[in-house]
Length: 202
Image (tube, rainbow, N blue to C red; front, side, top):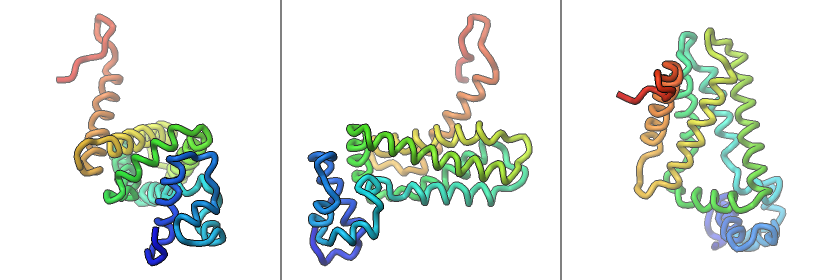
């Protein structure tokens, strides 16, 4: 990547991904910096270590989710709250970089160290949201249940977004996921039918 490109962080991300696709374990921060046309010290001004290059944005997602909880109306329902937080989270997804996210996920999936970091990041985000929910003290809403639903919805939306064969808008995918989640929970609330199966969708 050329030195004239203004976005140093994005250049470092692109360089890192290209090198990680060839071999994550053998790639160093110095190699990433060199490929991006910058210095090792510049790399460490942007990222704590090479793993963090692939997880930029996770902190912003947590911040957006916490802010959405804080702004939620007192009488909001659990599903409406999930919807509000989900919309806040997907606001971080850059449609212009969907292909990059797909390549990134392939690298994460192939590397145990990165999969572990991914799980830690998601757990940290969930804990932040749960704390915000408890602080909010919304009546009739269980923080643990809502956080679980948010986690399911956001992960499913992200996965569908990076795997979609067309250019479907991430907001439309999120709406589909939330609708399916509502249907599934409603079916569970109705309980099994006489033959032991869940009720069919109408």
